[in-house]
Image (cartoon, rainbow, N blue to C red):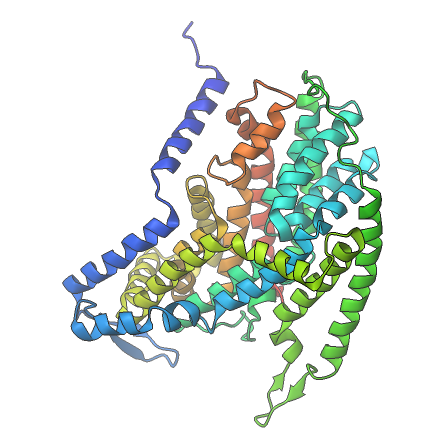
Length: 518
């Protein structure tokens, strides 16, 4: 009888291939630097090329590729590199992102997120432990470090305290934190802002209307809220089912060990944190009162001279949510003694800004690349070629196949390229206008939602995920011989189930005309 290769060996070879391929892919910043050089070189070759696309009125619009090596165009690049292409790109999208992080920084650096996770985690009934951990993981996506660094090890302690294999709880928490990254009950999270505002830029830079399938203008930070709200409950249910059906039966009898000197009360809520949580509750009520007064007062809807209804509170939802985070975080920090003066709150904001260096560098090269792509006409040409190719295949008649195809493409790329934001910067400028040109039903918020589903579903099975090594280290405390291949094998059921059912929910929203957000 011919010997067969053990399944574990095959899995390890696949993982090794993914790791090897992923390591050969440069950092996204390097990729964008290359892209800038490629645009200059390529437009020098095809500069002057003309092509026609269909305009909004149904007529043909003629486009011409600019040669970016011409002196006039080189001057344009240098004149616009700082203020227009970077700081002013998308009406100041970079500033909006930074403002959101200021509020999150106050709440996170005060210790509020850690205390909430510990408070809820230690009060969970055994029966509801898995769904609660998944739910907390999803909600922790507003501050990813708290989810990865606090919730996942806490989940191991909670299960160990119940005499269960800690890996079961850690897998459930990992599924919630990472795979549920694009779901939440809170609107306009940093991820919503980054995905939404960039989707608007990608669309408008190539003449794609930033409207829903019903023709209504989209609000970038909240355009997915109904979808991610529904996704939260669906993912909790699916994650619980996978945990109970696959993970717990597989690991309940697997041996594990407790690290020497481990105290199962390590994650108990301190007296100061309890005091802080009470203060944070009153801070939340106060902040919501301030928001309500603004929304009913100076930011209330009104009708302008043209008869159009303007809703200032929706247009400023980012600042309003930032105010809530600052109020609640400051209240917690003052009550626990973490913040003793206004300067301490400012320092919390500065600390958060210190983590944004990569984003600043990434956006400088990315936004200049996007500006160059639009100015040269090359972006429109790429969209034209891609749309023509998909139309030639007849896919314009099957928007559901376009959705599924884009989800699967992104899910595969995610195995080799980490980083939600950087991948969106790479894929969004191409696919948002391209898919719309193929079929106008592929609106910007639909394409962006499909991206979020795909990216989040395969985060837990790629070694390229930023916290992959951290999660492995946490799990090895209980199972020293655990490999990352074992972790991937453990998480595959979550990934596949999430990908299938989440994509189905996405298709359902599209097919039944359910709004993705407001």
